Length: 149
Image (tube, rainbow, N blue to C red; front, side):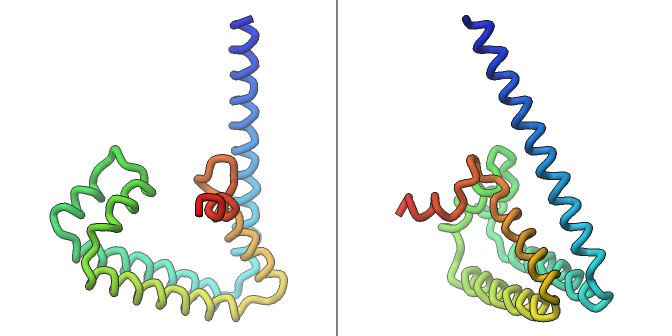
């Protein structure tokens, strides 16, 4: 009986890994297809967004105190865990910086989305939807957040 249960669990885990790999492969294909459909100007806008995000991260890290640096460098915490631990330690200036950076990124993304045609926008939204599910067990997404409230 125990052997059967062990085999059953191992098979289920194996199928889960296979499903995950297939999902990653499909997402890579979707991203590749999307990127190939972009004009040079659109590709440049995406690259500028990426550079802006890197700059924002550097600017924020430059404001960290010792406690915040320790949180960010703690390898025992996941990315989500670091974010949760860091949030209550932010100063008013850091919160204001975070908000202004968030607003700037939102404007850049809106400007980019405005340049997309109907098919590109559809693919872009599919990619965003996939990205939103990443890292959530069970893929509950927004439904789960509402249940907690």
